[in-house]
Length: 103
Image (cartoon, rainbow, N blue to C red; front, side, top):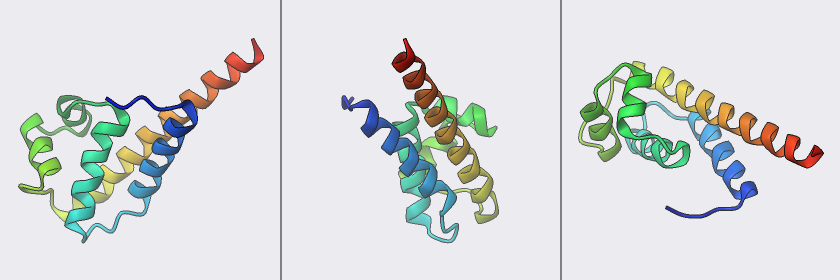
């Protein structure tokens, strides 16, 4: 696990949200990178991602390794979930930093 500064962590979350929002659903490699980054950046296990998306843990594992991928029509909702999760983490970190600064 890499130790990062709060500013670097916010930047990682914002980059993940941006990558998810701008995903080209026809780019298989970009989808694999996005799923792998999702687990790392959001600090979620394959099981937590699978539970959130309504699929099995092995399915998420296969996606993150590029063994097989969801149908392209399903990639937009998955990318939207990743963007939303990253933005929510960004809001929580920003709110937490703001309340610490006021103390």
